[in-house]
Length: 387
Image (cartoon, rainbow, N blue to C red; front, side, top):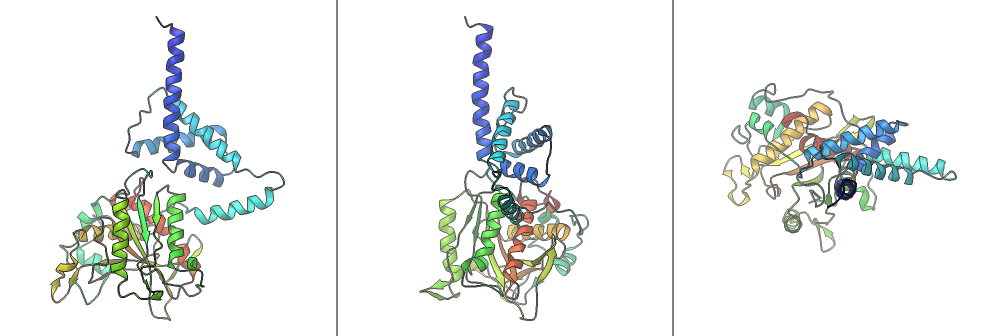
């Protein structure tokens, strides 16, 4: 018969092993470490007890929203927190510079973190909801531009239903969750150079980096040049080429639940699409919808989009959240006749970041509030329209 002490020892070992496995899983499969380290870095010297309480809160929130079930009343829960805390402390100490390196390293770290961190926004605009947003006509007049080529009817996007539609970035980042690509990869800005990183592809890189680093999403950034044919710019087949490429990526990665086609708009040379966000000059953005419909002849059958309502509802929610948290950052939602590959999944968006008159820096800065809006609308801690 096993003794009470021996039983306790065996149980303790089992708890320690299970705790170690769970702690490792959480650290590897979430943005917990990033969130914790960024908070500590930006709040100066805080006590060890405060750090532990912060970590406990972050881990508890992660567990609550996880696809998996964790029992926080289990005896091993405290051990899980301790193990993650030890991991965090190790990472924190590892990044501390040596005495000789202190000045240059610190300078570099501050610059790097400033490029990645997007401050959590406060409501500085108007927070619209199903009760105060008004009629379909009110919404169209306030938020939309519908071209003469197409039409948008109240039946296409019942406003209250659209605001309550549930959108979510699925998975826990062990597999790809978000795809960013560029149908028009060669779109440049006013001061773009021959370096591809100063084109719209660079904006996609920036957006991907923030979504990964700050929010912990698993992101694929497809930099295929769909608008280059035989070494020359040719946009006539770009959407067809992009469709083939993106479908292959989605077939290979069925875990992807959000697809973003990031563009740069073309406007009058005398127009500048600039606002200020968090003290930075920032290019304005525009959400773009395709109706698969001509105003005069009706629906374009060969461009049928089974996700038309979802496309419209998602960008309406993004627009509404932008009006609340970043007033002036977004232009009116733009609606045109064709499909623009927005039928490739339920959660697809085509987004125009700035225009040819914007600087590359202004366009890159736009990636910050855009990433935050994506997380606010579709992330674990949803805010605003579909909360």
